[in-house]
Each structure stands twice: as structure tokens, then as C-alpha cells.
Length: 197
Image (cartoon, rainbow, N blue to C red; front, side, top):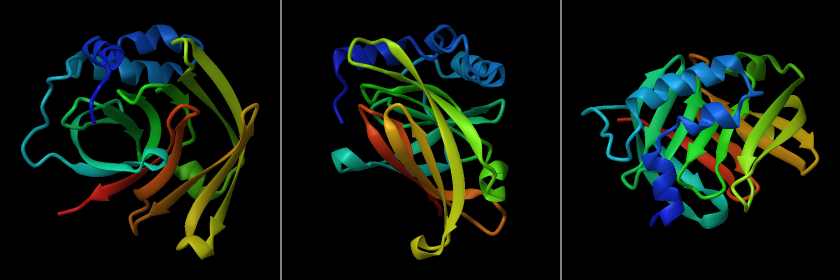
């Protein structure tokens, strides 16, 4: 994957811009991202040997690549690919991306426990439009188990841009082992799968 100049600049600036762009977002998430920015503020940051890995697939682009964990700060795991693109997962739930163009700057997202419990909830996405303006989308979500999809938990969320459907598969310990989650209108869905072994 080749980064455009604007993407490289965003990566080299790190995550500190998130604090400004999500001023009305979750204080806990802002704190986590701020802490993460302190240790991953360079595209040249390298994962430790033996760090956890995931496979990430950008569904609309048909691209699949590995990512390695750089750090965990305040419950947010930061994964990076070799080209410097990054995703941020809180207990397997996507809360941000960098380096994919029209990124998900942050998200007020449910916990994995809320998803497993099947509780209705709201979530907010803060994503970039084509003018580098951050747009907030507030979704109303319901959760149900989908036996036809291998007993996945499906989160159906409706907002001004329509309905999105996130899917999560949990292991026996209650952790997200794989998922298919909405990133933004510019990116579409990302499939995330733990790379074991």
C-alpha cells in the first residue's frame, strides 16, 4: 500500500490532532489516544519482537495485510502495518484509524461486554470528509446473535448516512477473535482477525 503525501503527513504528526478533532467526544477515549500518541508519534515506530498481530482487510479495496501491535495505552491497542497505517482497537472494538485516507478519527463505541449482552445503545463516529473536515455521525444501534453467520453478534446501527452492520465473533474467554467493522464512508468496512501463532 502506497501512502499519499497527505497520509504521510498525518502519520508523522502522530495522533495528537485527535484531541482537537474530538473535543466533544469521550474524555476516556481522548485520554487513551493522547497517551498512545506519546509512544507512537512516528511512522517509524517499530513493534517489539513477538508482539501480537492481526490481519486487516479493507473490504471495498480487496486488500489484506498484517499489522503488529505497537503499544497498549489506557485499554486502546495500537496496531501498525509496515507502511505506517494504524488501527486502534479497544477490546477488539475499532475506535480509530490512520493512513487510509478518509479515516475514522475516533469513535464513542460500546464495550465488548455491551455487545455480548445484546444491549441497545448509541455510538458516534468522527470521520473525515473529502475536505479534511471531521464529521460526527450519531448511530442508534441494536444487537442480535446471528446463528447463520457462525453465531456472530451483529450490531445494526442507523444514522443520517443509513444503516451499517458490524459483526463480532468471540472466543471462549469472551474476547473478540475476529470482526467486520465500519470505518468511514471513504473506507467502508474493515475485517480484523487475530493472527495466532
